[in-house]
Image (cartoon, rainbow, N blue to C red; front, top):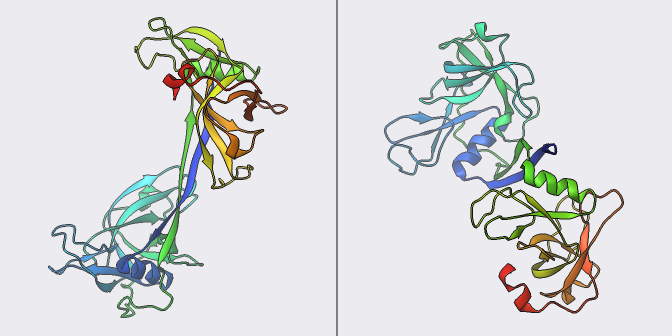
Length: 313
């Protein structure tokens, strides 16, 4: 059995969101070294502040300052910090009830080890040297045995309010395509396209999935298909993707390789985008050292009759 492939993959994108008046004041306050909470109708102070009472669902917006010192209510030790976490050395995740608040704020505590952390210990905010209006303006908490921090009396009004944030989202994981698709990928490196035939319905699926999606039975019989095929449907792309060196507009389509019963997708080149059409006969174009076709181009053959590919649209 050929080796099953695996590779590290990263999904990453920036998430941009606007801020309402409550979150805008909270993050602007952090930039100015002020921690704000919001007061509920029954007198509780919530930190971090929210726009609606989590108990009554009433809209709330009365901002009040709380201290930058507080008490640890619960904690957990982080032995191996990950990329993007507040500290690059082992630290404790802590819920801190800041002086004047009735709820806990989650953040990192810089401590020499788990023996130095306990529920009920006093801590204070360590502010980041450079602040922009984000939760990271609190670099972390640190142990503190002094007096409670003095308040500035701020009511949530600042100049140059922060109105939006960009939060990077990232997922690191290891992907394994499994036995069937590993065989498909290995064949592509030899400039061949292979699928697997269902022993029940006899359909050939490319890329293979290891099981027939129609019958639900395992597949193992390998079948070489293509290399030519028929464009069954397509779209014209007008927005340039980041880190993709292809000028817009370009065409991306579904291609039914000869002998396959499932269309795969690929870019269509070698023809003006406004001349691309359903039924166009295409063939793969490989680049030197490429492990998969760079794009598909017209073969010059007459277009395929619709009845020959209508089940694959």
